[in-house]
Length: 157
Image 1 (cartoon, rainbow, N blue to C red):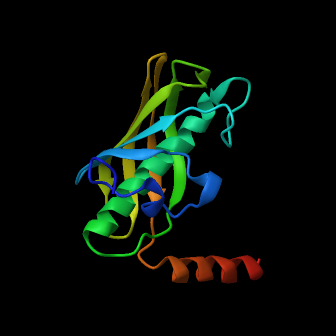
Image 2: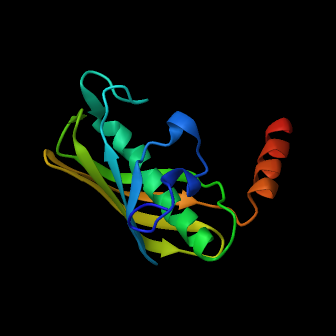
């Protein structure tokens, strides 16, 4: 557990290794998740002295996934895979989050149903500016069955 009592971020995400783009959970609740990221010059998406603003969508999606992982952990369920369906109104005050910049990534649940559909209002705050978007996500109740259905459908096309 971290100093704040939260587990390492990798335990809440269905990602591994370099694909874990967030560093830690700062705050978690029933309706929101706040995570941190220190932009490093050697990170997966970092180039030209920083993290391009377009990569902020993935940071937001991982904050949503961390929220889902936290909810699963609180309910003693395994972390499930989820899918980013779309992004609405992505806006960023910066083109690049500079190396060495501390980012605060927040996802707030706007809508979520029992079928796994959800909408989250997300934003990234940095000393240089802010990025924000609304993300539509889907986390199927039975990911294995859902993926098997997709695979069967793909072979019949």
